[in-house]
Amino acid sequence: MFASSIEKSLISTLLYQIFSKGIGYGKYLLFAFLFGTSMQMDAYNMALTILDVSMFVLGHVFSVVGIPMLVKSRKKSFTAFKKLSGSIFVFSLVLAAIIIVFQYIFFYDLVSILAPGFDDKKSALSYEIFKYFLPMNIVYLPYFALISFFRSLNLFSISNFLDFLIAIFSIAYLVIFLSSDIAIIPLSLSVAYVVTIFFALYFAIKIKIIGFSGSIFTPYMKNMYKNIAKLSLWFLVLQLYRVVDKGFASLLDNGAISALVYASMLISGMGFVFDFAYVYITKFSEKEDKAAVFTLAIKLYIFLTLPVVVYLLFYSKEFISIIYGGGKFDKNSIEITSSIIVILSPLLFLSLVNGLFQSLYQSLEKYAYVICLSLIGVLINFVLNYLWISKYGIVGIALATLVSTGVIIALNLLIIHYKENLHLSYKNILFEFMKYLLAAGTSFVTIRMLSLPFFVSSVLFFVFNYVILVLLRNEFIIRIYSMIRKR
Image (cartoon, rainbow, N blue to C red; front, top):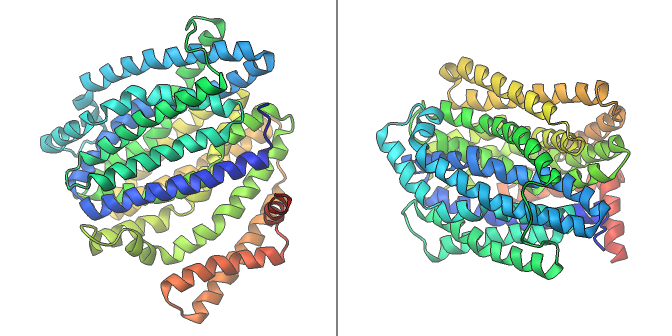
């Protein structure tokens, strides 16, 4: 009933993520226009960081820990699946209440640690903004618990649709109640999550995949608590990448945090469109030949991201001026943000591959790997930030993130080869990489020679790139074409 091919799951996820992230970019256009790289945006981003290290961390944990356990219970029986899903949902409600109390009691202490450059005025503004996140805080964990149920059953169309609704409702609120008050941003997210969780509950009841009751002390749940403890530490360490960057940026001028966030969100937003981590958690849990799935996934990420990376390396300033330019996002904001983009652009590919390693370890329940490697990455990032910030400023922060991520991927490759005995087809991957690099490079040189307007050059760059890949009979383009013909 719930079977789904990996191609269908990937395409469904890609389409919904393109639409939802496209809407997400619309929100950031509004943010840039209304607030630019201002103290208000710095305060908002720090309030969001508090959520990152508390509620958001656990939301991701529910998706990751729950899926492999739910897949196993589904194989046992659908009754076992419903009992487990009910227990997980009840636990999400209890945990949300505990976390919210913790957030409000220790808010100022957390800000003083995470943003050492913030004065009392900025800290107070962050707290005022944080209050408007309360409705979202209440439903966030239950929402992600429901999402994990759908994904474990290969119902990616439903989970993607729900994520799409959040994007739709949040930007609709922003547009309808357009205001220069920074509180409009957290309010838009709160409204979106509260409305969308009712849709999630409707689907869960209609499909009958949850009983909405269950003990939180079953053997399954006790095992889940252990994994949650391990993974919470891991996800917290992952968030520390951004926390460290924002912390050092708080020591720079007003707007440095905002510029870093605008650039990072552009890269991570594009990565989100191509991020199939949750698909691969399920597939790694189901498939025996994990090395073959892993190799194919890396080749897919190269195919999707390499042209974009090349484009951002050479057209970042023009791209940022069109995307964010206008309103309070002035020329100085464009210069700073585009310089960060140039450094961070390779992360579009590297972060996706890093997420692929994490999906593999999660399916194997090897959480010690991800925790230790992530901690090493954060420590490297911290040291490099400390060494480079005084000389290179905001660019040094971006460079530290890029280098530390590259080191972690190299360590991951060694671990899966020697510890997990997964032998990837490195020659095949390298050949594909060189082929895509040749296509992107040829497209760029051709466009430069034509000296066309920026918009025309941008369109033709990607058109030429994929035309070359068609001529080279790219396997992914052939698969997509075959699926379209069958339909």
